[in-house]
Length: 253
Image 1 (tube, rainbow, N blue to C red):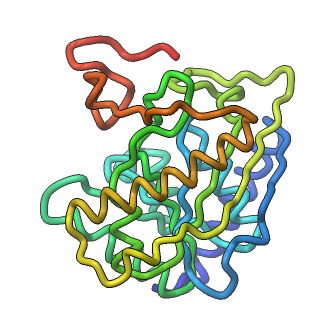
Image 2 (cartoon, one colour):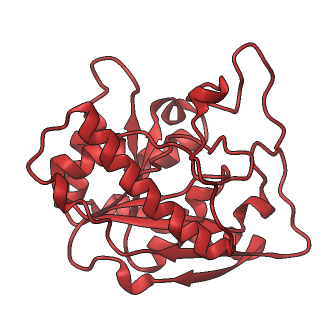
């Protein structure tokens, strides 16, 4: 799927505003940029701890002359303001069920074949972990990697949650915060080559991807991650949307 001139122009305009806002809100430090693959498409897999994560990762990738293509839930494409921006920048809608559920993988593969960067949040939604460590991942990134053979590049960032806390309604401008992004080596998924996309394989691949993401975040935070990965289902939490417990209220942290 070659990126049209119109899309590039639209993306440049949107990115100009986004980068300016990002620079105003926070400082930045990007580490490990030399590990981004050159001349080929790749799957970027960052942690997900606040709603402004896509701005952080998108800014970093765009500044490296790699147009980011995010997998985003289909409902966002139908919103009045965000929808036109997503469509104009050729972002990838994800339908969680129904006949269109596999369409996102097809479009993502086209982007990868054209040398693009597809950003997949393996957790599927904001982490439910109380201390913002990566939680148990979902299998979308693993499925895409198995089908395409594209390298999976783990990433971690830290600091954006101080600007816009998880589930917050406003930003915290002062004092000015710094957001750090760390890019890791490609995830070693060689042992899965040639295997079918059965549930066990995809879950094992996902665990490997999430382990690499968690290691990068631990390096940024200078802390040890929990011994047990947070599993929403074990804590009676829903898998999608805001941090809603079944029959309860949204989390406040």
